[in-house]
Length: 332
Ligand SMILES: NC(=O)c1ccc[n+]([C@@H]2O[C@H](COP(=O)([O-])OP(=O)(O)OC[C@H]3O[C@@H](n4cnc5c(N)ncnc54)[C@H](O)[C@@H]3O)[C@@H](O)[C@H]2O)c1
Ligand SMILES: O=C(O)C[C@H](O)C(=O)O
Image 1: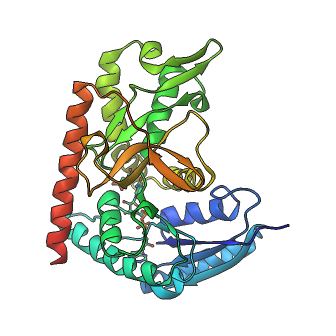
Image 2: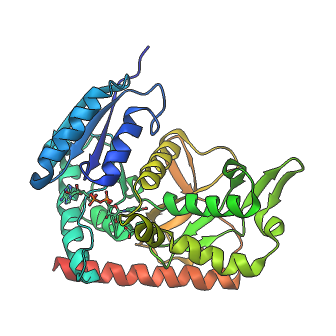
């Protein structure tokens, strides 16, 4: 019997990530090739015409899994009944703007959209925040939607995770699908810590540690880390626009693994509400290694953390605490 459609909200759907993301969702990349979907697309009135153009293209593409499209500038209509919400909409930083200017605009958006989701989304709606500052926007959304379970509010660091897999695959000339268990700790910003200490590569002789195969700690402890941390900036420099297809694809990976589960023995990185694991302060949205089963994520416990890593985990936590304080100061 055909499955009932799942309603997926994409905010900022007229923007560049939205344009890459909605066809992936409509093709089953996010929820599976047998899962019908109804797309809810939200943008702001100045983008209404462009949003309608995206809707026209979705109709023209005749996706068999796409059972309906809601394209609107009304947050209540957009949020009504949604099972998955991918929050991409936001105000990008423009020339001459301070971090605080963009933070203040975005946290206000996330505060108001929190209420719309809380009141109108389906119970147990899973939320993924993509828009920057992603961790702090997700935290504000969580704080202003107290009836949504905190486990349902996450932010995207899977792009950074995938970037780390990509760098290791290039360095070792192995298939990216043979590399697993890198970790992104902390903020989706240049303070993040991409950690390969638990990562492995599948070889004909079994799984081997990435550190052993790379055999160059100096590279792993410096250039590898800064390349992943700075990859977003490198894409902006090259494209004059921030990453879009990789962000959209990683958002699909994040939701797919969360809903359908991670493969046995594999962990992925997700920005989730910290519970004090690994001595990360509770009350931040922080990226951890997680596994997913039956629609729930759990933080992988008990990984040894060396002194080098400890400092890096703490540094990115400090930045997130500062962002949290700044976000609250913008809202008062
Ligand atoms: N977490 C990640 O890995 C990651 C990666 C890449 C980009 N990003 C972030 O994702 C966001 C979107 O990037 P983009 O390149 O698509 O930007 P974009 O400017 O092309 O699109 C953003 C869209 O959001 C819309 N918007 C603005 N305010 C809104 C509101 N209140 N409600 C609904 N929609 C609203 C805009 O009209 C626009 O269409 C940015 O914040 C970017 O920094 C995050
Ligand atoms: O928009 C940015 O600053 C970069 C983006 O978050 C990315 O990681 O590609």
